[in-house]
Image (cartoon, rainbow, N blue to C red; front, side):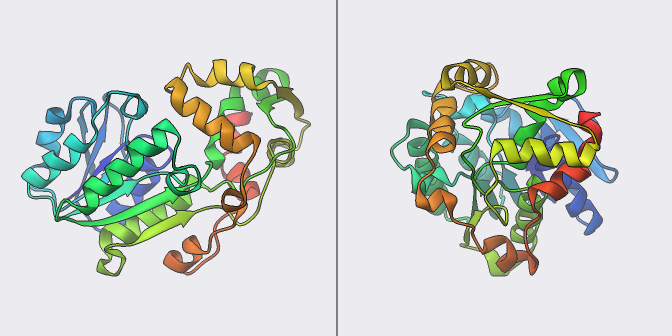
Length: 279
């Protein structure tokens, strides 16, 4: 049995679907009760209280570990989740980490994630680590304003990074959970091309077949909005990358192709697949 945390999100949902379609028994974990793909069972647990994960881990062979936003905040201790998994007899953990642990290793949230990676490596379990860059699905922040006003607003409108489709992250995670060849693997996950926020808005407009205006936010405006959904430290670390990506953050990684045997999806494909969110 495989446990998927963050199972109702943009990565966890397609991962749960892929695993059930592969014939695996899956326990889908999220903080609140929710519908999950057919064939999976759902359990509610708050990862900030690691003991709540115990019922989900009973009898599990593998765990996909995606931290909730509050576990990126100062003072949290997500390493306890690895301890709970080991105590329950889990043999393999696939950790969703961040590209920033290597490209910006001294940001507060990056230091904490690097420590969690090290804890996993030293746990005695089989492991794989996924380090994605920016997510294509962050464009869903625009869904309401696009529907209501035909407007997308973001900072650094003409600064791009190779955002990755969460469906590609999920597919790589499934491969790492199911295939022994990926034990000990560390994968940098990006899309196939650098695309700016203004370019993302244009791709959404193409998918809709109607105009989408782009408005550039100041960093302060963006930080205020992002801090409502994530710790301020994580918002600052993210904005540092979005505003001035370094060469490592602009690099298109070959790892999606290496694991899946196909190229990663471009942002335009993500927009076409998710266009109904913007209608």
